[in-house]
Image 1 (cartoon, rainbow, N blue to C red):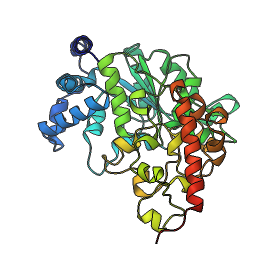
Image 2 (cartoon, rainbow, N blue to C red):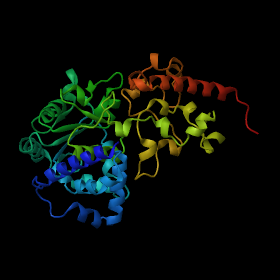
Image 3 (cartoon, rainbow, N blue to C red):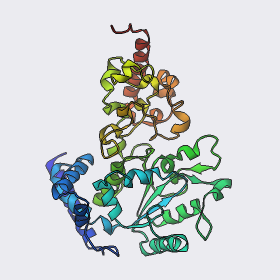
Image 4 (cartoon, rainbow, N blue to C red):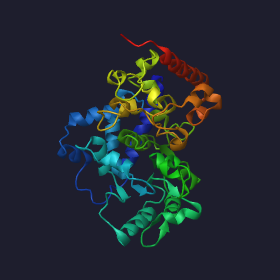
Length: 387
């Protein structure tokens, strides 16, 4: 990107941040985000390192880091309503439950969560009043984040919330109507998740199916805390929705396949595969494709951002990707510990899921990858054992 373009973008971000500073702070704030982070044991240096990492994650140059830091300090100017639908609360847990609070979780805990069933102290009628108050007071200004699939149709009443007896779908429709931006957090909200898996007894659907407004999908089971916070900060800076892929996932986080960044990719290229869990190949960290890794078909940045405060991710621990950030993964990704042989041999033109809807520029490449994976598997099957 040319310098003049960066200068123009920086100026636009500056105006956005200055505009946010003019908004009134949320009620009940007796300390700044800087004080909150410092009290948790993080230094100014730690904070700026985190800011620099987030800036790079959003594909912005290092010169934008000071501006990002300013944006974070006014993050509480945008109220957030977080709804829980049919889910396990794993996405919230991913963000907030860590052995030592990360800066991501501290910032998210600091911002104005006007309604969040898991962490708010209110209950019953008071909780419902808080939600109604937030919708009315911040109409057209709040960010809506929804976790979980939404029971619909004849089974809509399977999810009934609060003293008013409203269905989850009715609440999702009502809050979506006046939201400034809508994020579906986790695969259940983005695509229906395990709740929508066959035979889908509750009629669960994705959030995008109950509103006509654009929904930004942040899938994963659960998504990493950085994908959640990064998407929020992107909106904070830009004031607009991010560039999206075919499934409305932010491209900055879901542009590449797990396979592209995997630390075991070298073993894949060399035709070195784990044949069964616990064998010598597994101990040597070989590719997990033959024991079911769905990395070649899954778009996410797990290998780069990782989990548990950036310490690890499933493939690093020796278990293959299950494709959890793809639509209908529970049904289309097959048996967890077996490869998708039919999709590999048929390649993209007869494939399912990400293969059929990837950006056209990648279709030919993906076809070659499909053939390559099949070839690797065939070669590995007849390859003489090492001595």
